[in-house]
Length: 149
Image 1 (tube, rainbow, N blue to C red):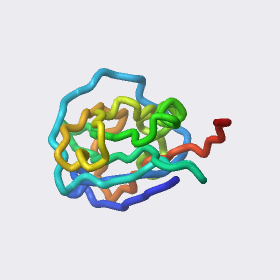
Image 2: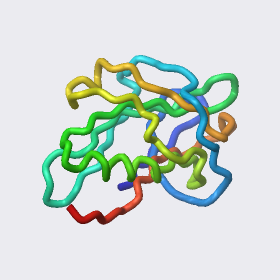
Image 3: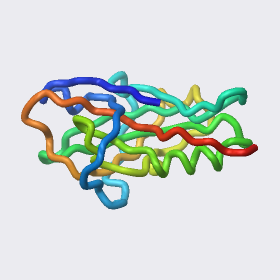
Image 4: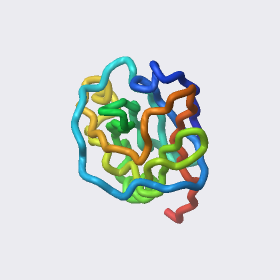
């Protein structure tokens, strides 16, 4: 799955993103802050061919003290596929201009139902990237996986 959004510097704080590429990836850090979900959050999902439910999420990039942070919240809608979806999130990458700047989105806050995403509080984590001076493309690269159920 691949979502991409091209944004200018002023819009970086409100961007939703998705992509792929090699580069220095930030090591896992603690949650830097929590923010309420608003209209600036984009949405995405991890779904399985032929199976109901999936993982649905809302995410946003924000600029804090010259650095980029990603904020997100998600809902697992099928207990049968939850462990596989968690494994996929651990390998999911946030990219900027095709270069990974954060790996492992399993830190996203969790809600019980998809309809709760719009009123949730998202967890944020700092990335390895500074706020870009020029227009940038942000993405979330969800790896293709095959699991036996």
